[in-house]
Length: 323
Image 1 (cartoon, rainbow, N blue to C red):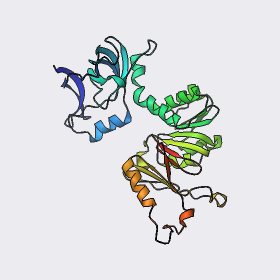
Image 2 (image 1 turned 90 degrees about the vertical axis):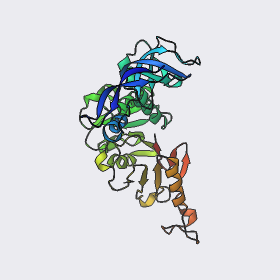
Image 3 (image 1 turned 60 degrees about the horizontal axis):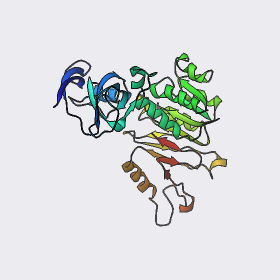
Image 4 (image 1 turned 120 degrees about the vertical axis):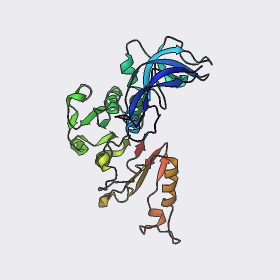
C-alpha cells in the first residue's frame, strides 16, 4: 500500500520554486529496495532543472544515502538495516525512496552518510572521465575546475592512479593543494596551465573558451574530456578553434594547422552528445560534388575523415570525448 512521505517538490508559486510537500510513495517493484534517506547531495543539473525549467510537481534528487528498510522481493540487493548509497533518475530529495537494487552499494563503516551521498554522480563522472585516458601511470593530467564536485574527486583518483596531476582553479589554491601539492594553477583562464604542459589528459567542466585552450595543451595522441558547461555566458560564443551550437550538443573544432602539420593534423572534428546528431554530422560530411571533391575543394582521397570508436571522435593527433 502506498505511504505518505515528505519530499521536495517543484512549486512555481512559492519563492525559490521548491517546497516540502506530502507525497505518495508507491509500493516498490520486485527488484526495488526501500530506503530511509539520511543524506542527499546537490548536483548542478538537477538544481538547474528544478529552479529554471521543471514543471510543477517534479521531484528533484539523484544522489542519496540511507538505511535499507525493506529488501527487494526478488532477493537481490542488501538486507534490511544495511547502510547504502544509491542513485535515482529523480526524487531522491525525500524521506524515503524506492531504488533498483543494481543502483545501490553497501557502505563501509568508515564512510559517513554525508560523504557517501556526494559520490554517485560526481564520483562516477570523475571515474569515467579519467578512464578515457587509459593508463595514467606517470602521465600528466590537468583537471579544470579542480575545486568542484567532480574536479576534486578526479584529482584524487588520478593521483591514486599514479598520474602527475595539475589542478586549475580560478580563486582559492588551498581548495586543491591537499591533492595536487604544488601543482596548482590559479588563473581566470585555463591557458594559465600551458607552461606546465603538454598534457596526456585534460578534464574540463567549464566549456566555452576553456575547450579551445585545452586542445592547444594536449600532447600527441592526448585526450580532452568535456563533462560540463558551466561557462554559460560563452555557450554561443565564437572564438578561434571552436564553434558551439545553440543546443550545446556539438563542438565543431576547426584549428588552423601550421604548414608542417597540414599533412598530419585533421582540420575538422565533430564532437556530439547523441547518436541522432552524430548521424546528421556524418551525412553532412559525406556531401561532395560528382567530381569527387568536397566543398573545400579537396580531393576525396585527401579530405579529413571522422572516425568514431567507443564514443570518441578521433583526430589524427588528439580525440575529444563525451562523458
